[in-house]
Image (cartoon, rainbow, N blue to C red; front, side, top):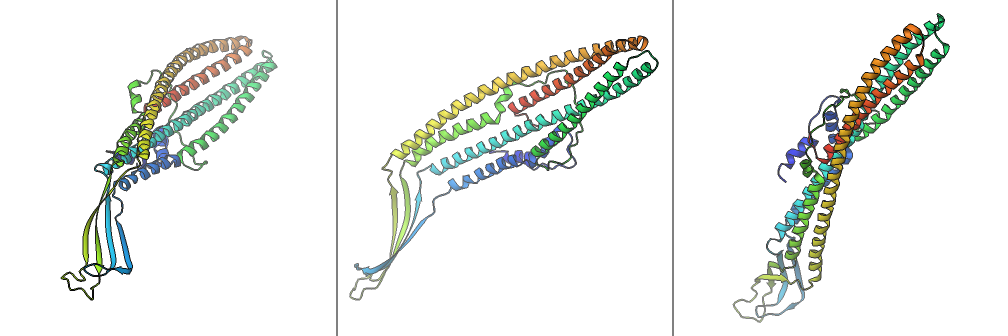
Length: 409
């Protein structure tokens, strides 16, 4: 459990001031406020409280007896009896119980870390689409400005007799479509903001301030596959295996005799007809007790249960490991695919811009083929949008890899 206090302090008690704007800022806010993560941490704290419980001896047993009909002895009749007994488990039992509780507390801590990493991944899954939506809004606004310029030019040409009314109507159709897209994008932002605030543990209408702009990636992020060993799910299962192995040893210890030490104190009354030197002298007697575990079935079953659980956790760990490695390659390849798409879209944007400039000059001179200008303008718009979507898909895959490899921030 070394360094747990420092780790928890960095995760949950880290001070934060100002409005969160970068992705890392939102990670901090989510780690501080998310109720699900707080629940995981409280479960870890509760597990820590189990350690002193199992490390302690059972309470001593005090008994009292009163003789309604005093029992006569050579030293006088017995009036009452007190006894105090303390039972001790077999040597090493308490230490093993403490070790098991400590390992299980570490399991809870690893579950907390996994929940934190998953929360970071969920925040990323909302944050990057928000950046995407903002970029798409800017593109649509720019598109509307261009269409407004086109409308002015087309109207002027129509009034001069060198243009067509149909061209003006086509621009109106495109403008209406762009305005509708803007409305949809703005509503999408409202929905995403509410979901992000839910992850951050804040009111749904709390303002979301995005400081960053979407950066178009051009080189793959280096992620080592060996980093998968840092995943808390694997560490949690390894700890469960350790706990099961310790429970096997504990079951053996619990099947051994328990020893007890105590004292008895008997109060005697002075006998009337006795003339012995010890007449009426109270009795003080040390005692030793031992529990004999005759019924062995429960201990054998407890040991077998621990063995089977260990085998179960080993199989589960292998399954989780296989899934992690499979997911690692899936997301890594997804990142490479998105980089290829970004490169392709970048080239298509450049070519479309050059072609559009040529077509626009031709239209300005001849007043013909305006429909082709509009078509290419919308095609250019789509390429730019797809480039942004590919970038967000890249970051989404990267966020999944960060979760798989338990990246720290």
